[in-house]
Amino acid sequence: MSTTILASLVSAVVGALVIYARKNRRNLCADDDASGAAAYILENTVTHARVLPRPSAHAFTYPTLAFLLSVNALETHALDLGRGWLFGYGGTSWRLTGLRGEAYLLPDDDSGKIGRVGARSLKEKLADVLRQYGRDAKRVQAWAEDGDAWMLTMPSYIGFEGINPLTVYFCYTPHGQLDWVVLEIHNTFGEKHVHVLKPGFYVVSVRAPPPPKSVELASSPRPKIRIQLHSAGPDASQKPADEADALEPTLGPLKLTAALSARRAVPLTCVALLAALARYPFALFLSFARILYHASILHYRKRLDVFPRPDPKPAAQGWGAFAPQERERTEGVDRVHGGVGWQPEGVLETYARGLVERFLSRRADELGVAISLVSGDPSVAPRTFRPSRSDGQQHARTDLAIHYVSPRFFTTLVLAPSAEHMLLLGKAEDLFRVNSESRYLQAFAPAASAAPSGQSSLYSMTQRLRTILLPRRFVLAPAEGTEGQVVPPTHPLDGDHPLRNALVVCALHLMDHLEKAVFTLLRARFVPGLEPWSRWERAASAAQDERYREVDGR
Image (cartoon, rainbow, N blue to C red; front, side):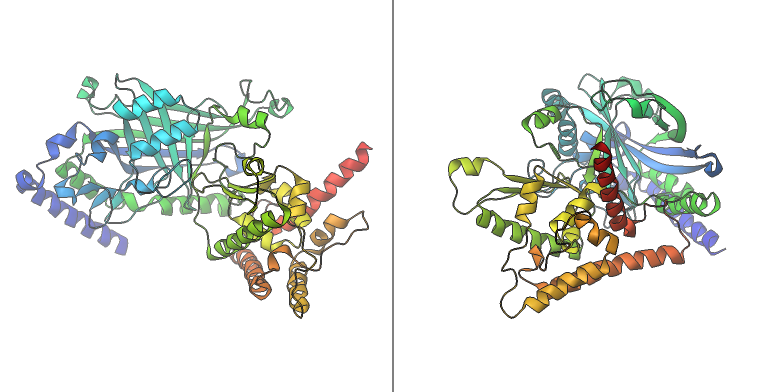
C-alpha cells in the first residue's frame, strides 16, 4: 500500500512538472530543438534467461529507461535541458537527471601512461580504451578528432546514481561508418569492465542506430543488443595453448542470454523527459534491487551456488609479460576485455601497501637491485625502486619484477608467514606473478637482525600469531618433504611496527570470520571449495598436488 501511495505521489509531482514545462516551454525549454536530433529517451525491454544448469533455469523481463546521446553534443552541453536542471552533463547534484564523465571508463586522476591530472572528456577516455585494446592508433586518432559516438546509458535521477549495469558506445567515423562497439559493464561491487566486441564464446548481436546527425534519423533510432554466453565446446580444452586463440572457438550449449531492446524512442526534450519519468517513476532506482531479487531466486529457490567475486582481469599493458618476446606478443594485440575500474583500496590495504613499498625501497638499496611493482589496474602507475647509488646500466634494467592483480596482494603479504608461503598462495589464486622466484625469495628473505635488541619477543609473538591463525596444513606446506625450517622466526615486513602489524593480522582474520558468519547466518552457499576464507587450504592442496606430480614424473 505504501509503495502504491509513494508511486502515485511521485507521478503526481512529475505530472505537475510536465504541465509547468508545457506552459513555460519558451523560457524553460528553449534548448529542446537543439537536443532533439542528437539525443533520445529510450523505453527498453530487458530480458535475462539462464538455461544451464537445467535445475536452475530462470528467465525474467522488465522495462527500463535509458538515454541515447551523441557524445559530441553531450560534451558541448548542447543537450542540457531546463538550464541544466532537468538534464545536465558534468554532475548529478541539484539536477533531476544528469551524467558525469567521472562515472565512466578510465579514472580521471593521475594514472601513469594512461591518465593525466584533471578531468578528461568521455571521448578522450573512450579513445584511450580503444588504443589500449590494440585498435589502430591513427584510426582512433582520426575518430577522436572528427568522429562521434552514440552513448546508450542510464542517467542519474534526483542525485542518485544506480549501478548502471550496461553502457554501450557506438563509434562512428565522420563518414557515418560504424567502426567499434564498446560495452561498459558495471557490477554490484563498484567495478567496471569493458568489452571491445570480437567473436568468441560470447556471441553478440548488435543492431546499431544510424550515426548522429544522419539523414537516416527521420525515424527514431531503436538499438538492440543481445548477448549469449555458451559453455566451452567439448574440444576446447584439447587445443594446444598456442592455438587456442588462433582457431575459431567451438561453441558448446547455450548457458546464459541477455537482451536489451528499445521498444520506443522519442527525442530528448523537457516535456518528453518529464512524461517518461511520470510513466516510470522508479525505473532508474530499481536496477540493484532487481539484481538482488533474481539472485536470491536463483540461489535459494533454484539452488544455484554462488561464485566468489573474482578480481578484475589485469588490464595494464604488458602485465604478466616479462621476457622481451612475451612483451612483443602483447603489443598491438586486439584485446577483447579487461577491467577499467577497480574497487578503491581499503584502510588495511593502504597500510599494507605502504609497508611493502618502504620495505622494497630499503631492500633495493641493500641488495643493489632494481625492483618494479606493477598493478593490473591501469590507473595505478608502476613503481620502481632502485639503489641510491647505481650506474647507468643498473638504472636501465629491472632485476625483480612483481606484477600483482589487486590490492589484496599487499594484505596477503602481511598475513603470509614467509615468502615461500606467499608464493604458494600466489600460484594457487593467481594473485601475482614474478619474473624470478629466486630473486623474489631473496628480496623477501627475513634479515638476521630484523628484531632490534630487547624486542625479539615482540617480533616472534607477531610471527607466532600468523601461524596460529592460519591452517596448520598450509603453514607446514613449504617444508613438507624437506628438512628445512617451516616458518622463519621473524617476518620481513615487521621491521618497523611489529605490534601494529599484529593488530592488522588480527583484523584481517576477523574480517574473514565475519564474512563466513554472515554467509552462514543467511544460509548462503559458495561453490564447494571456492569459499573466500578457504584460500589457504586451496594453496596447501595445490602445493601437495604439485609435489605428487613431481614424484610421478621421476
